[in-house]
Image 1 (cartoon, each protein chain N blue to C red):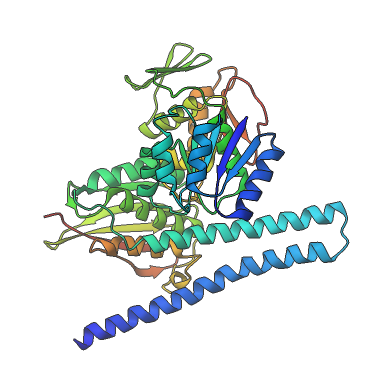
Image 2 (image 1 turned 90 degrees about the vertical axis):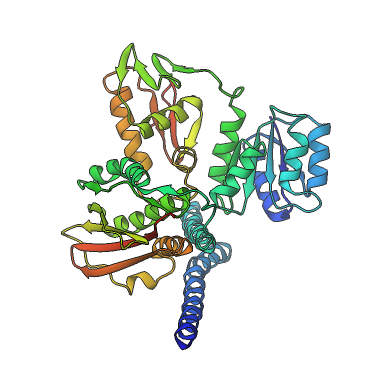
Amino acid sequence: MRVLVVEDDAPLASFVRKGLEAEHYAVDVAPDGEQARRMALESEYDLLVLDLNLPKLDGIGVLSSIRPKKPSLPVLVLTARSRVEDRVQSLDSGADDCLIKPFSFTELSARVRALLRRGPRTVETVLRVADLELDRVERKVERAGKNIELTSKEFALLEYLMRNAGRRVTRAMIVEHVWNLSFDTTTNIVDVYINYLRKKVDGDHSPHLIHTVRGVGYELSCHAEATA
Amino acid sequence: MSGMSEFTAKEAADQGGFVSDALHKLSQPLTALQCSLELSLIRDQTSAEFRASVEAALENADRLRQSLLLLRELSDADDPGDISAPIDLQHLLQELREDLLPVFESAGGQFDMTCHPVRVRGNAARLTRAFFYLIEYVLRGSPRASLSVRLQPTNGRQVKIRMVFSDAGSAAVSEDDLSDPVSAGEVEIARRTFRAVGGDLALVDPVAGQSVWIAGLQLAE
């Protein structure tokens, strides 16, 4: 997997590069927006990690110029702005995910993995994992043919986990995407909701689909690994 | 006029004190981080000791990161955001209750709410965040608290939201507790968010086992 990291802060770019290389990605670094645009258009990358505040051409400018030509290239934006509006602007400009600085490498790595393992954008009406089905239009959930009643937030959480089936998602990713909050909540809201979902979705069923990934977050999949 | 200048002087003094407290709070984890890294280079350490000092450094770096994120949220809290559309307060509070009821219930508490339809001035995402922050702050000190939210009669221009957190085992929250910008940063963010749209947030009559907060919001015209 080949990743282009666009970051003008040399020490930070170096840390990100070393960290991703330790996880066996091939990493190139671009220190400004112009160079990033050129490299992204001339070479084949599997992922772009893009800082927004860049010299020569800012991150939104880079996104705008490469998105029409590389519609399926996953882009993870790094931003120092934490407002919901800033996140929305990045996503509207074509980013697939947005990570707020300062961040931990564990969080960056989880998001890189999630984006790289994601297939084409999900447009199906019905999401399926094993015998679990979620109908996004009818807003109905069934496991082994039996209806499961969920609140709207439980439904949104399950939909997010199913869209990312087989990938680890962190608590911060869940809070951002399901609750639309861009801060580290100190409440146990995610864990509480996951427990509710577990009781309703896994209950007595086998295999259990919702797994805890210690030190990271959660994963919905048929295969149990790194669970607690 | 003198009332206005007194108000401005108090605001400036508050801001100055706040920045000074914030710097102090940030300097603690940064100092601990720097010292732990320096020590790990100076001393010959076993691999277990080295691992322990790296873990300590990480913990301090995370405290620093959390504080910075909070302070940045604070710096954005005075911006009201898009307030062009009136907010359905009843709907906003119902959604908040639906989101957070499981958190209260999981700790043995309750979250009940009585609200009539009313439209207020503000930005739904920011107001939701402000309520979240206030609740986070109270739950950190009183994890088993119950919350009761009631709308008080309006005075024609403002609606008052009375929030009573009760937890028999908790100490009273005081205004002194709220002057710490990092440990009480959530309350300051909530206050500034309400003020940014012409409202306010106040802690009233603190007693042990209960804290009562009243948030005011302007009615939409």
